[in-house]
Picture 1 (cartoon, helix red, strand yellow):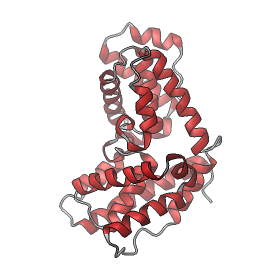
Picture 2 (cartoon, rainbow, N blue to C red):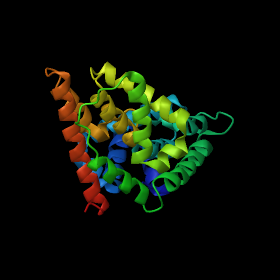
Picture 3 (cartoon, helix red, strand yellow):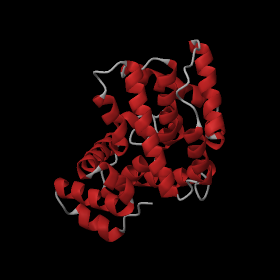
Length: 256
C-alpha cells in the first residue's frame, strides 16, 4: 500500500511539476515494484501524468491529495472516477461540501473497507476469484442472443467473484456489463466470446483497463491486432490476459 510520508510531501511541494512527477514515479516503483517493473518507467510516467490531471479535474491540487488520488487509481483502476462499479467512490470524490483533503482521505478509508469486504483481509476472496477465472473456458463458441448473453455474463460475474458481485448488486453489475460491452464494440469486439472476456476484465481490473498504463498488455494486444479479424484479436487479448493472470497468481503465492 502506498503511504507517502510528510517529509516526502514537503519535499515534493517545493519542486517544479516535472520533478514532482518523477518523484511520484519513484514512490510508485518503491511501493508497487512488480506492477511498475512490468509496465516500465515510461508508462508509469504516463500513469502519474494522468493521475495529476484527473485529480485536478476534481479539485485536488495539493501534493497529498494528488498522492492519495494516484493511490486510488492503483487500487481501483485509473478510470475509477467514471467506473459504474464505483458510484460510491464518485459520490465521495465530488462531495464539495467538504474540503478536498478531507474528502479524499475519507474516500481512501472507505476504499480500504471496501477491499476488506470484497477482496478479503488477506485478499483470499480475490485470489479465489482469479483461480476460478483462470480455469474458465472462454473459447467454446457462445451462440446466444443479446439478452441471453447479458444474463450469462451477470451469472458468470457472480460465479467468479461472488463477494464483489453481491456487494455491487444487480443494477451495478448490469450497468458494468452495458458500459463494458459498449467499450468492446468501440474497439471492434462485438461477438459473444470477445464481449465475455472484455466484461470479465472490466469487472476485475476496472472499466478503463484497456487504456490503463498499468494494464499495458491490453492496449498493446488490441493495437497489435488491428489488422486481424475479430476472432484473432480476441484470441490474442485472451492470451495476454491469461499471462497477466498467471503473473498475478504467482505474486499472490497461491497459484497451485
